[in-house]
Length: 407
Image (cartoon, rainbow, N blue to C red; front, side):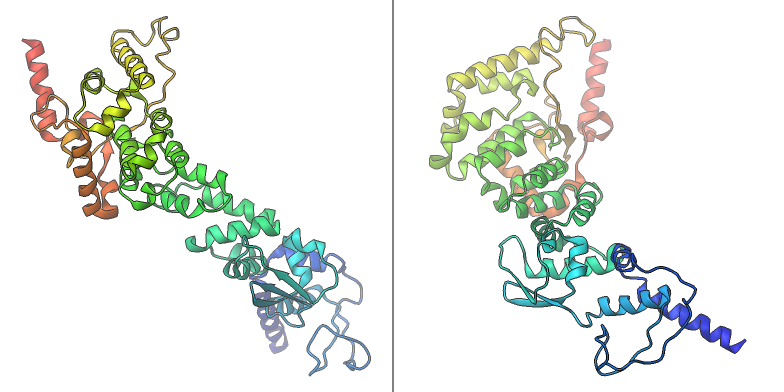
């Protein structure tokens, strides 16, 4: 009975030794191991001088023809990096590794055969990322990702051609619980210096309610015209009206007007003027006090765009959604934004509310300062644009309007 308990304890200890190793690594190592009638036969110790062994030269061992025991032994060798056969030098930092283990996960290392040193000085590969990727190879699902490692690990895994890890990482990126709003914007900014266009495009679709906060940052002001355009053209931007998109484009240009005004026509293409109310478009067609805005709006192309937007804005109020004129007039071709309300913003009140303020560039800059003071807590206060979320004064205005109509 005591012998049985002892045997079970030994087996349990061996299982613990192998639980964290990547199963695919073990499967590759064990693919040639088969059960045999002699599976439980133990051979006497052999001398190191007789044959080479994978284990340390300071002791002798039993050669066990048993898969469970062999698996535990190999796991110990791999995890504790015993008798490693290759040194990978990443930007001057040396890692002792098993080449076969690297080749299981990386197509890059399959190009190497028998070698003692592999030097990697590529900018896409970082020391931290290689260290964590090798840890992932050993642990598999037991490995825990950290957000601040992800971009470097992604770039390094692409260079080392590690498809399984890249698939796992994309699953992490695609989960909106992991990356949305502020986190998405931060990752987008970090990814800009590198050839990560797909990742950047994905993160832009997640900015959503963080957009107005993003516009307050120096990171936004330091974007290129193409990057600003890409952000302003996404339909998931959370804004109260299309006027805020116009002002966001203007804010970027005003950061260095003399240099950036050459992009005015390009950026105005990102503004959906036909989503603006008719009264606001009419106000843009009048003489502007702000010289820079006047220069933009006086462009013939922009004047034509304002006229088309005005026509669209007026027509859509008189054409029923089931009307055959919807398609000829292209009234369904323009995507909406994610419309929101910030009760602390005076220009977010209904235009017929006594507390409403007309949105010009000065009012927009005051709003930017309010957001900066609120820091990253601001976007959590935004609500969907619907009557139940209106400020009490706006709700009262709606009631009064209904009463007047009934009279």
